[in-house]
Image (cartoon, helix red, strand yellow):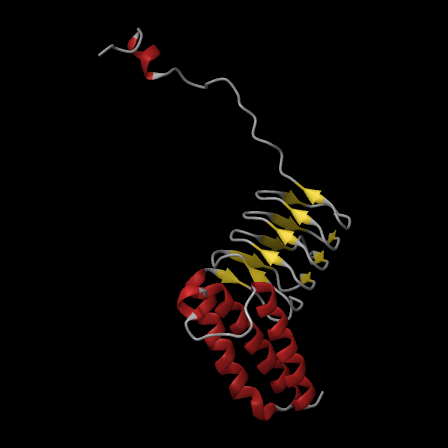
Amino acid sequence: MTFGRLLAQHKLVMRQDLFMYGVDFYKPQFSIIRPEITLVRRLRQAEFCRSLSQSNLMFAPLYYLARFRYQNLCNKYGATLPLGVFGPGLTLAHVGTVTINADARVGRNCRLHPGVTIGAVGNRAPLIGDDVFIGPNAVVVGGIEVGSRSHIGPCSVVSNDVGPDEIVVPVPAVIKARARPTWQERQGGSRPKG
């Protein structure tokens, strides 16, 4: 692919990412006030530089520099976001621990919250469609497919296929009897008055 086509594709992806955040263009102050946008921007820069270096080895130092800057930001925020996994329009709700397997594939306009894990079982990783919402602390594992426009609720563990337009919610909390006596029962009486 020529440099011009790679650059045009890169700009299109960056524009789609910013659109999903509701902003028109990147501002330098985002590195402080909107670090999630900066993280996605650095991801896209590293992907672009990797594509350049694959087409011409002259750009390899540029790729290593972009990869170094991106990896430092990932380490700072505890994110593991491999290159080449996400389609355009990726949004991170907040910076935080997000762990994605390098073999996973995530479609366009996906929204991830902190604590999300998308992992492989054996050599098989999930394939996630377009416009998917993945809530905080959700886990998606195995060689499964998550259909487009699906919502995976907070704290859900998904190990089976999810069809398009489906909503996955975790099992609600179950209240059980107290496992141990209260302090009043241990004292042998009721709560003191006054």
